[in-house]
Length: 119
Image 1: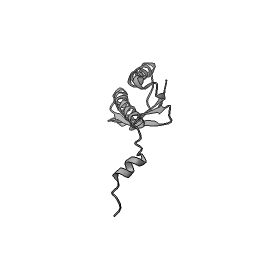
Image 2 (image 1 turned 180 degrees about the vertical axis):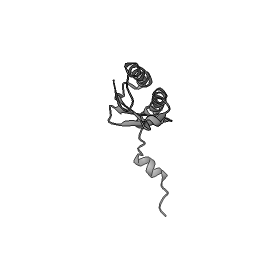
Image 3 (image 1 turned 120 degrees about the vertical axis):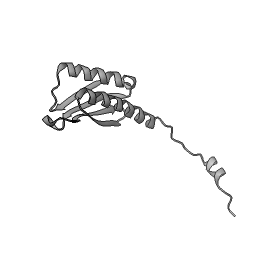
Image 4 (image 1 turned 90 degrees about the vertical axis):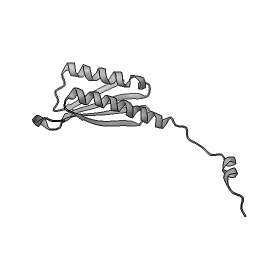
């Protein structure tokens, strides 16, 4: 499974890249048979002003064509990445549970038995 990382205003060092790949690989490992890949976008929203301005946007691409996306901000890149990974795991699990629900189909016999006789 591929993990694609892009950034805008956030320098991606080799150490940070390894940390991000390790975090998201561990997070989505249980779902890897359902996923094609994960894309991450990191940005510094406020520039040098500081604050909770580091953005981590994560997108998981499913083999069936569905997509799970989350946006997480934090005071630092590592914090935003960790929270984004946790939220993405929940989003993937939720998306998979929605797609695995059986569709209830009513048979004509059950429809007929539930209708009141005509007067």
